[in-house]
Length: 185
Image (cartoon, rainbow, N blue to C red; front, side, top):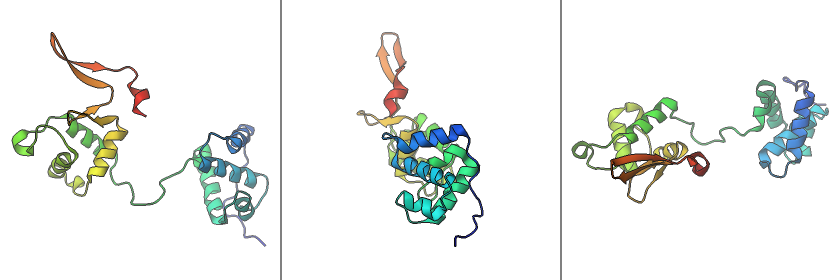
C-alpha cells in the first residue's frame, strides 16, 4: 500500500501536456530535462511516485515527490536543474558588480604593485576594499568575469568581449563588435 501523497500533481493544461510530450521525445534536449518531463507525464497518467521513478530508470520516489512539488509551484521551470551540491553560492549580484567595477578601473602602480590586473592582484585589491571578499578565490573572480563577457588578452590584460581600444589618427577609440553576444558563448 502506498503512502498518501502530501502534494499531489495539479491538473495539467493541454499546452503543458503537449510541451512535456515534446520534451520527453526530444533528442537534442538535456537528458535531465527529458527525464523530468517523463516523470511528470507518468505521474499525470496516474502512476505512483515510486512507479513513475522506476519507469524512467530511477529508484527514489522521494525525488519524484520533490519534483512534483516544485512543478506545482514553478511550472515548466521545474524541468531545469538547480544548484547541484557543493558549497552554496556566496557572492550575490551586488558583489559581482563590485568585481566588475574594480576591474574596469586602472590599478594604482604604487598601491597595487602592478599596472594591469591579474586575478591575484584583483583578489588582493578586493580583499582590501571590502570585508565581504575576505575569502574570495581567483577561481570565483575568473568565473564572474567570464560570465560577464570578459576575457584574458594576449597583452596580459582583461578586456570586455567585443570592446577593444584601437589607435587612430585622432587618438585612441573604443571599437564595439556588433556580434559580440554571439561570440561570448
